[in-house]
Length: 389
Ligand SMILES: *Cc1c(COP(=O)(O)O)cnc(C)c1O
Image 1 (cartoon, protein in one colour):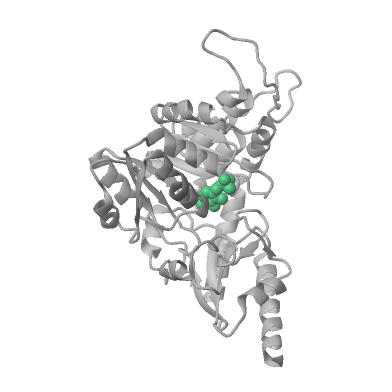
Image 2 (spheres, protein in one colour; image 1 turned 90 degrees about the horizontal axis):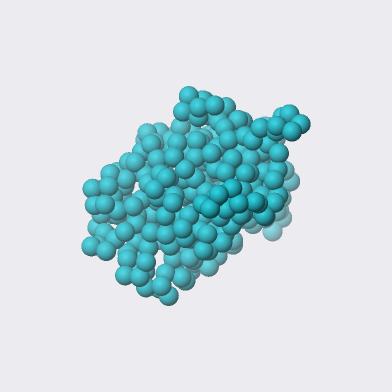
């Protein structure tokens, strides 16, 4: 089957599948061997070489979803991110990164790069000019993440890609929040696309994995480092991930729809002080999001009015679960101040626009009426409690 001629959902369902020649089963068989006979001198199959039958099959699907030539899957999103960064950076090199990064990525940079003599600069403004100002003669990589966590700010992918191309700098994007359903950065000129497959690709809160997609040439360079770092994914999980991706298009489209409806509904409510969602006309980056995204995603954030207690509200929710992670079929919510951004000082959080009452909402596939009902009953409870005080 030709992935270039197939629609998104057909790629999700079929590309890369392994034919069960023995029993003619409907799905890819799973091969758990860690030991394979030599096919010839060059081909040694071994899970840490990223070339078991199930790994190779899934990589074809993921490359097709992101319209890249080649891909690798890793044991976690952080394994994918760290391996990709270390493949393109060495002692004396410099990287320019967006300030609003996933916490684990920021920790990797802040805690490890210094030890290896890699220089880094963060960009606060998120405009192409902001990135350009930080470029130095030894800059090798520009790294972005859009939409960002937790305020869903949008970085101009095409502008960054073209700026980097002119200077011969490699671009990397963390495309986790958008998923391949809503954003395909390779088509916009980005060199390397990274996913925490733990999130939308997995989608059921039961898989930890990562993925990198790029040209064959770049992926070969990443592979040379990957086999040394050893962050490959177990074949059982590879097989589960293949199964999960079959419904990626269906899930995320539904999450887009739910999130847009809920964002518009929350925005009109008196008890809500602010809603952050790139699909809202009031979002400062709405036009840019419309230009570079096919859908606005399932992530949104909101603030309650100041006199309402966000922690109490979170506890009173019944259907929407408090959870550290995101992007499952079930709706989850967290306070960035208490969890993902707890290590920042209040000043640093305020500088990024993250107020204490902010809640990050990962919208699931449930019926939106039930999600709304849950929010309404929790608001009613905390307002009644506030009156008693
Ligand atoms: C979760 C996440 C990661 C890290 O992925 P793990 O699978 O937890 O290692 C990286 N980037 C983003 C945007 C994430 O949400």
